[in-house]
Image (cartoon, rainbow, N blue to C red):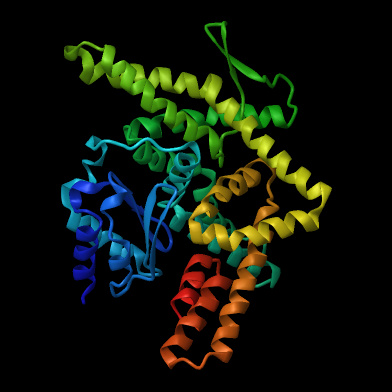
Length: 384
């Protein structure tokens, strides 16, 4: 059966186009937010060629595809047509806080993983070239390669704004406009001057000499922009509701942007920064009490979290640590989990008596785990 036929069957087996509220993908899975989960014929979907598995997790229906998920997703969108764009019009079932949190985190970070992964790989390769003295550390070559990689992380709020706006069903361009306010050079320069203890550096800017705007560097930040876009959704809905019909075209976005940006600068952004710092302090405190225990916990739950999609919850914590401190203690623990998965795939390749095709799956999984594609390795193991 061709891929397109399998996709057509998937749409039919999950209840048809009208049962799809939203659809996106991560590194290995197609993720569906469905209106009625009871319409899904999960066992039949598992039998389709190219499908490695299927599960209902955190109010999402997930179909595990593996490394071909991007091409499947593009074909799925083409098959769905306008339904993918009209998802916001469909009713939602009420979800629990944990399910809502997991849906949000995976939905926001899933689409931008390719950019983050690509930039991270370039940074890692550059660090290796510098360590091997293949290129001079202060050369233009290093500067150019570094700016290619660092741009994604520095301007991460813009990526998150677009992704969050899609998840929260609000205007993407207004979301980017709010992110631009947080990333404006004047604010960032003021934060850098404050951090460097320059003379005359202010801890806050004042609007009309009455409203303080705390000075923070929001470059590379994660939490502030996500919560700001969430607030923007409700601000937009409120403004649109009270605005006279004749004025909506011009004044709804104007008032929404002004209120949303002020809310982000005065309240949400600073609270998000301190929340991120609190998470970093908690992780650091856990490692301070017992680094071995912390490593054991993270390493043990990582593979299980990958299988359920809950590993996305660790991503904003790690990125916030990099933003606040310049380093992260979760990533090394995750890397050790990767190496254990890589070791398992290599062992299966070594002792397996299955056909050469199965050996190929194991070897492929080994390299994917070593290069941080843990989920693909895990699901390839399960497929053997």
